[in-house]
Image 1 (cartoon, rainbow, N blue to C red):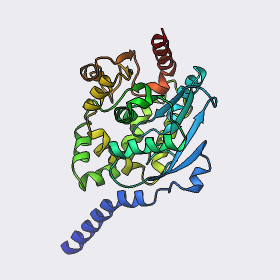
Image 2 (image 1 turned 180 degrees about the vertical axis):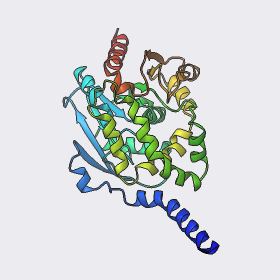
Image 3 (image 1 turned 135 degrees about the vertical axis):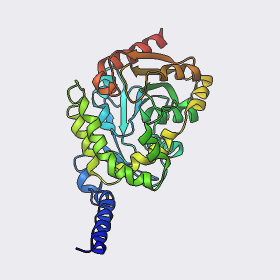
Image 4 (image 1 turned 180 degrees about the horizontal axis):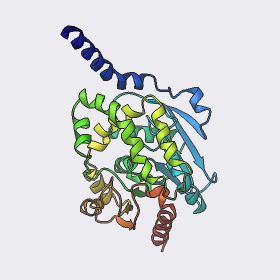
Amino acid sequence: MSWLLLSGLLFLGLLLLGLLPLVRERWRRTMGPGARNAAPGRFARLSRGLTHYQWHGPTRGPIAVCVHGLTTPSFVWGGLAEGLVAQGYRVLTYDLYGRGFSDRPAGAQDKAFFVTQLEEMLAHEGITEDCILVGYSMGGAIATAYTATHPDRIRTLVLLASAGLKTEPGKMGRFIRDHSPLGDWLMLALFPQLHRRGCEPERALPSSVPGIIDLQKNELRYKGFVPAVLASLRGILAEDRGDDLRQIHRSGVPILAIWGDADQVIPISAVGRMTEQARSARQEVIKSAGHGLPYTHTQEVLEIIAANSRNRLD
């Protein structure tokens, strides 16, 4: 076999290897009517596409709106929503664009992108009274940004393992975030396996959301999920919410921040950073809780929220 032929075969092999992540993304399932047959709740047609949402609990009562994080859609709230309903709340959960049963619009996923979705979601449901806004992980950054923009609309801001406090990804994550188009290719090539592997350690933990590990992995079946994660890493998760927190502190909106002392995603050092930006924030740390504290330590989170509500009424 000639050197020229070997070189050609090698080039072809490298080309196919390079195209594989792109082809794999191209052939993932589309989030459309067929996939949405299994969706609970309803859909709102907002400016950037369909948004899946669900109400939990009574038709009357104070409203709690829950904003999920980077990779785990609104099913993450299953157990916590039930607990909030038991405390007397009407609970609204919804899927951020690019996740769950919602559409996957292209483009930047920055503060304006997510705040607009939340504004339109609340307007669609006719929510005009002030509410409790609960944000988990990246959802904490979104909830913080919304509250800074609309402090008069929020009764209490509840942050669970919140992003937005100068938390940086690892070396590979920074490279993928900061280098395009190579970072785009690496994200498509590496993230699916990293996501599956990252979910597994929680399989043995108790959870208020049955089958949450498999539900998390199932997101990879749908086109647009991985690009949406990358767009958020380059968007709202690359932004610092320090100015927003200082503005919320000055506005007088109460902040309740809950952290896990074993969190490997949002380090416990975020407690000090929160104190620097919003001295009025009440902060609680749940012992032995990791980043999945809304579903692994649901009862502890609910007890802290209930105690905070009682303290405000006393």
